[in-house]
Length: 364
Image 1: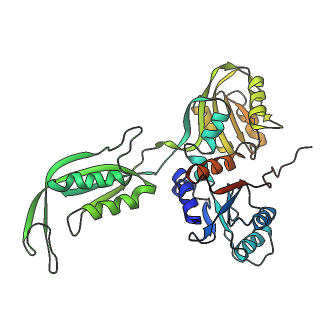
Image 2: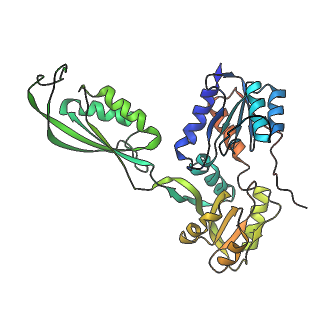
């Protein structure tokens, strides 16, 4: 039997929770990770109708893009839709899970998929994530350095771009004296000891840090292995908000608008003056107007996003074409990503798209 934890684990391999913005609330919001399930309902927003559909289909897991609880809940007494959804989910043993800005930020998530749907090539992250990388330093007796190094690599350390098993190693001498009740691996308690050691330096992403440190400690021969962990200012180029890529050739902006409408089933595009042909395209699903500056800095001819404000269209009119296709339209395919991720790992698991996937913004 498959559990909620099994499905969540697979989704979080794609979109680790550590990638979410600090204002977000992605993750397992309601329910036990140990609950056994045989189906999941995939949606964009969790509404009361979606919960009723889950009850009807006997699906005990609902996976959504937007978290049903975004701010804090101080009371749960059914006075608003969010409280009623949580109450009904708990009563019917339905787990609620969301992958939001963490899904926006990963390769294969919202933004790189949006870029692919628009036919872009040479895709890169528009605003790479910061504070994600750490340096781990440890000191190991020479004879055990390969064992410890390999264990750290297997736990996820040492990845730089398209390279793995990356480390820097320096020979040196470590000193220590075991106090009472110690059993030193080398030397004797109460006596100062010098040991030839290798200083191993490697890098790690935040989501792998605990696993790597556990592997270090498990494979290190010392009772008290010494290690340091430093947060790095380096940007991680393979994760972050937005994406930028290029079209095969320069294209008339209005022709590209037609491509957007066709490929994304967009009804309306709000835009400023289409003053030039376009080739370099920046995208940001959802509310991406805060990244207009990054799109301009990336040399984009056009920025495709949602939820732009009135003055932003005028402010950048001579610098970049701004194409607001709508919040929903720019990331509705989150459910496709969920479906493909789950069924690739669990091909016989009943993952289904909710009939309640619709844009709450209507057009007359």
